[in-house]
Image 1 (spheres, one colour):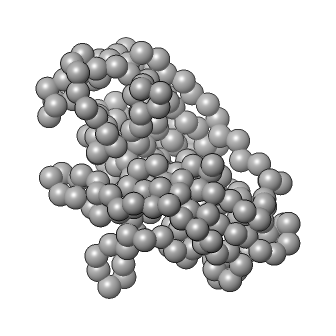
Image 2: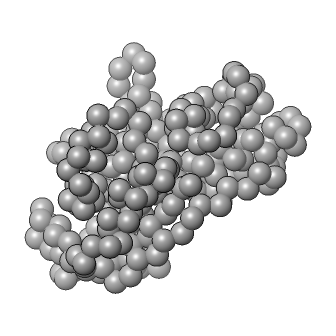
Length: 237
């Protein structure tokens, strides 16, 4: 099962925060984990969680998604059972004070596929180019290749063979409202994009349902690079 832990916090000092603290939050998250499991995560190329920071209605939230039961037990449960309620944001010389934590189980529906879909990239999103560097404009192939790789690793549901090729043939970007952005990682910046993309899905209802299932999964897995650090946060609008 897939789970989401949403942590609402305040600051002990007035600070201006944004999505760039995602990589710092990942480091804080690792302090809750058993060392052995932390070592296991570092060895994995695709990791069974994503996390990011966001501001909604002038409140601060840290969102952690786990894609397996083991990850839920080793990450979310460790945080929920800890008595730590003050987290040091050392580089900002401030503290995060946890106000409340909410755990929910993901619901991915099988029959809500539709022709027109708007998706929103909430934190900087980017893809690696095979020739080197970063791809900072999304294509259907980039988006769904990233989602399918994670879906095949962490979902118990099967996809038909060559499903990515079928998506590329039958899904198109019909509009977008994007801006370039950068995400800070250890003193460097990864270029990317944020904003909305309009998708049009052709084909039978069964195919539309499968496409929507992948997009629902992406809400928790993230899209593109460094979803464990806070990039690629995703929602369906």
